[in-house]
Length: 427
RNA sequence: AGAGGUGUGGCAGAGUGGUCGAAUGCAUCGGUCUUGAAAACCGACGUACUGCAAGGUACCGGGGGUUCGAAUCCCUCCACCUCUGCCA
Image 1: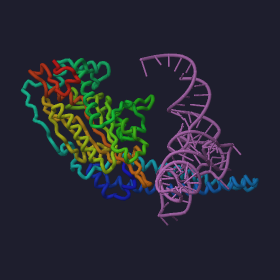
Image 2: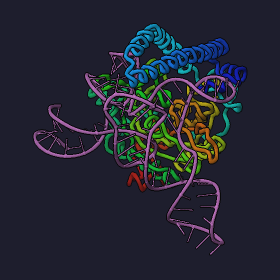
Image 3: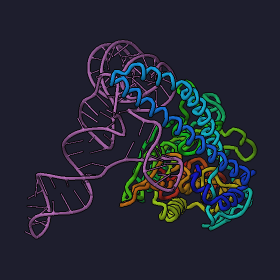
């Protein structure tokens, strides 16, 4: 959520930044926000004044009563009647003014960082770096969904029967490969200084609002209406919300957390082409890294997180490239995002396997995540960041396709994973 | 799940519906004293919004209500504790 005082002070810059994101009617919405804020403050002054005079009168009534001046007390009580009515209507107006402003704020996305490339769609993302030669497979190379079937390691049909589309069963070496990747990613993150946590998989509405999934992406999460909980779409939500309503000390920075969780996404409206096999699922496994950083150090932290993800991909010997997302393609809450994509050689496609973002103060403002500065009364908002390290299904897809041997009869497991899988091939 | 209890400032812990934003202790910060430290003493010490300021308003688990006035009374939700029951 944008900070209202910053909007007040830097109106033009913020409008321009939102336009870079192609946020529709940016100027109009910001004008509306500012006048809504002015209205809110006016309402508050009026309400406060009315309450102040009622407080004075109540205090006097108390004094009259203490002095046993019942008649004076009684007439003073009667005199408050009008004020009480006035306060009631002012309170109503105040609530409306606050809601109006809050609603505007909830639906305004973060402002992109100055380094974010111009552009509207994923076509406009800037390729910042490419690593590794693209594997040249022969014409018999199979896409991963065929390999999976041939090797009998993931059962989509069984998932369809037991749950529905997008909820596969992993079997045998397929299951073991999942477990190996999770353990490998967690170990690597721990070595990089991240503290491992196992968070809850269900979150409440406060948490959904805190990281920005609610209210604007309500339909993307599975909602348990009986108890009003949501299934997490990513571990970012519970892990970042550990820091909701928290005041840190400056020397607590940087805070680094890692967690493995299944992730649940309804993917409403995004089903279509290119979603075969493991490319898009309703439930998938992901290891997520989260940092809480000092505002002066958050871009340093972002680079560190990106480098960490790169090292994972390099150890897995997967060719990858790094995109700087353009203004129009960035997530709602992000100020700057790198996407990392691996090349899936049989599909001949780049698959997004990680998204590493700096949210600056956008989430922190919703979370009320601040830190104390020595000898300073005000408590600034911290910066929050997160990144996938990594999302499993597309990694598996690329590993299967790129490492298939002898017309897809067996798959070579990268050396770094072998201590975890305890096998060196799937056949 | 049932019965009972509790929820107050960083922590502990008072608070007959009326000058309570809230005693007191500890912790913290500043000062006196000391070669230095401890002790002792003096002082400061919540947050948010609003205002140039003085000030005003709100906050005693969350929400709602009664009242001229609520930390205090009522309703509801949540969390924790004890006992009983059930269950990985």
